Amino acid sequence: MFANREDFLAICRDETLTRIIDSDAGVLNLALTTAESQAKDYLFQYYDTDQIFSAIGTDRHAYLVRCVVNIAAYIIHRRLPKSPFENGGQSLTVMEYKQTLDYLEKLRDNKAVADLPLRLKDDGTNKVRTRYGSAEPPRKHF
Image 1 (cartoon, rainbow, N blue to C red):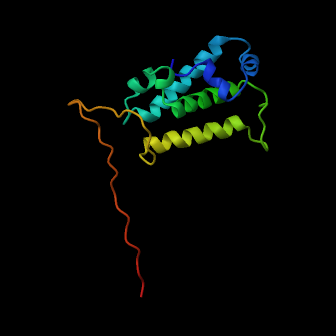
Image 2 (image 1 turned 90 degrees about the vertical axis):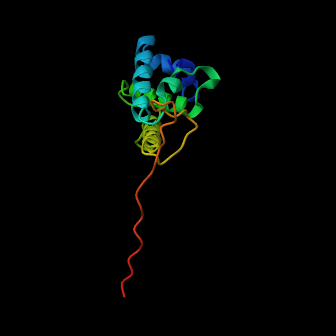
C-alpha cells in the first residue's frame, strides 16, 4: 500500500486514529486503498501510476502521500457523528479533502505540475502533455 498508518501521524495522533477506527485495522486499510484508487483515477491518463504508487519509503512523492492520507482521513471522518477537528462549522478534515481534490484536478487538467513519472506511450517515449487553444485578443470598440 502506498500510504500507511505512520503517515497519519502528520495529521492526527495514533490514539485518536485508533479510537475513530474502533481499533479495526481493516477500516484503515479499506480507507487507504479507496483513497489510493481515487488518486490514481485523477492521475492515470498522463502519469505512470503503477510506478508512482509502487514506490516505498522516502522514494514516494511526499505531497501525494499527504493527498492519499487526506482522502483516507475524509473517508474515516465520515464514521464520526461530529468531527473533533471543528473549524468554524467546517472541519479541517473536510477542508483539506477539498484542497486535495482541487490539487489532483489541476494535475489531471494540466494546470499544475508535479515531479511525477509520466505515462509512456507504446514506443517507450513520454506521453506528451500538450495544452492547446488560444486566448482571443481583446475586442476594441470604437
